[in-house]
Image (cartoon, rainbow, N blue to C red; front, side):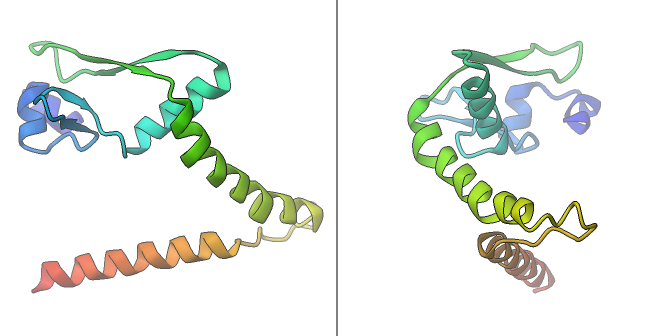
Length: 136
């Protein structure tokens, strides 16, 4: 977002030019935080862990522009259906086995779970495909 401030763009202009990738326009053409962006999930996690009900997501693009503020409410459905299952999987298949094997205590590198290896491979494939498309 530093680039946006340097260019002197408003939040509206930056969203239209796709310079701020965490924001989008909804069906009513109102700017909002993307519901599939890491920031959104980070906020949902923090709201759930702290027990808070709302968070104010703020984007500042320079003194000459308005500040963008969106009130994000805790969404228990997202926590229960999307986030919690992934956290449980991460703990059960990655954290717990490494603790049980005492890998950190023996100075060993942590062993990745199959789901982590699969995600890393998918990301690698996606990056390679993107690179190939750029070269065409």
